[in-house]
Length: 484
Image (cartoon, helix red, strand yellow):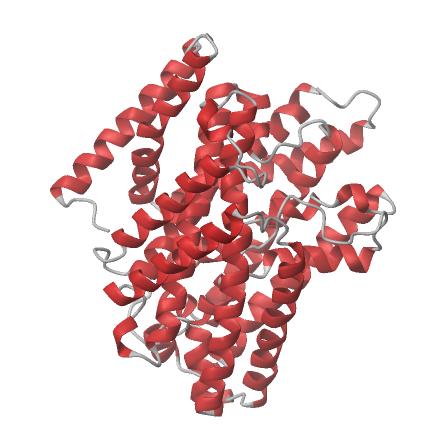
């Protein structure tokens, strides 16, 4: 998960070179999720399946990156965040649900961060367990409100911290990759190629599907690649930096996965405690490696948490200022912080931290929930780009070949996000509606505050679908048919 913000980097010069823009892209996408890759892949597949998974995910997410880049060019006036594309393309209620989905994804991701820190400390102190104990939840709660206090006081520019944190997380990851290949074991690598000798992982198709949520999670924030476009020396540099940065990140993620398979048998990878990069590294170099990688995890996660808390508050604040959310969410304090949105955000993370005490596998559950919720804004943005290409809106004076190419890219991105919904499974789709259905009360309040019509005929259908899903999901949770 990423650590980008929508603000210009501190001290940004008026014009950025391609290498600088590329570094911004890389720093934005490499987050905490990379540290959980070895075990998440080990549970699902062998080397062959992982190569296919990264190829599929890499292609799909690259299409999505191009979608955000193309939308920035075709609709430069839409600069209020991801939700604005859903609103522009499919109406106010679709935009509202996109914003809620993105916000809830940020909340689940931030909860994942605290569980991740708890799991990291659990290797040294038994009381933290796998990040889902009372002590871990208490530490996470203290962290939530410490960061809340700092942000409320006006610590708003996360860019400098992001740049420092990026160095701290990239260097240990590169060290991990180099050391793992130094300890390369040809026999282990050969046995891990299909991993067929290690129990039933399902056929290759099933193995690849089972990796889709983790591959998507580590790329969340790809929409931030075009955030700094106005600082580029040339507009086309943004596309170049996006591709170079994305391919660099994809290479890093794939190499972390492959290098793990090169030293540890798949069953041991599958059973590795999270953060699994820590335990895999320690298995080769000894105890110092556990400390070295654990420090890298904590630094990376804390930096990411700050940036994503700012992001989550902004995702509520901006729509409130544009009358899409209730007015109370648009209030600022004297430090200029969107304080009500920040309070709601911190309370939501606190609530999910409490839930981790009752969830079977808190770490992976929060990861999957964060990913599933992010799919809705991604799908609607891709569908909007596809709609623009098909209708020709915003393509006046643009070559037919360019329009055709961008329409194909948008179509591919739309198909990929639909495939991800299928890979997530009905459980997480229903859990998404359990969140969206009651959140619609905020939409009703916002509409009534400004005397607007509540729903168009099409929106009534969408509302009914979400409420029905929410009811089915709630009943499933109550009866135990849906387990957490």
